[in-house]
Length: 284
Figure 1: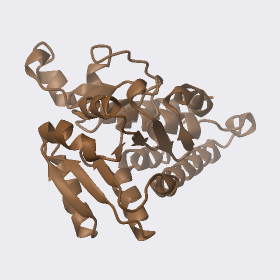
Figure 2: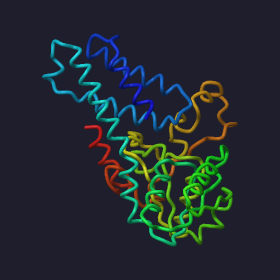
Figure 3: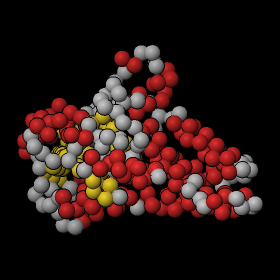
Figure 4: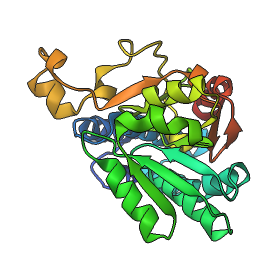
């Protein structure tokens, strides 16, 4: 979100004097943000969609002799885009409510703001459930998720990553967030997501993914090795150890669509097979 807001601010700055120059400035801002250790998948998808949305300005306005008016239109569309994505988590939380009821046991992995908000929304509507959260090594992000849930009064158990197979037989539903939703309908998410999804599939447990539409990415990986390294490693790691990645642990993995039941998004609820069609709508 902060990345997008900074791009809107850039659009309003006076350096560029033509539409082409403005577009170039915004593209350079995207490249700069990609050279950080933030989630590459999320930054890439959000920025690509922002550029696409903000540049869809009518030809009448583009040929306006007053370039300041054109820049104002860019900023206006950028702010509309920001307001839309700020509402996305609450929309997803409402869409998720029919999938959860009292006395369910829910398994989640790592820390996800949209999953957290959805669980809090369900609790606020009277659902009483038990959430199991993996530790999510190597950064222990699951501990932060568990603490947030406990502070909100939700019964929560923190489990070892290696205990997923043991606990899965007692789980009712598995919910993930996502760093990126691929054109295949699969997802890029915290390392360990694939193993949990495979285990859930083997034990016939439904797997739901909650993801904002700004995380839809025009990439079509077929397996782990086919997934771009920029999605798996920090930028600093790729720069300093690009010839020795075999010694580095990836931070994310790719979970193919066959291990996922539904994607719950701010655009609606989709099967993984429908993601490609939604991407076409987003980018056209």
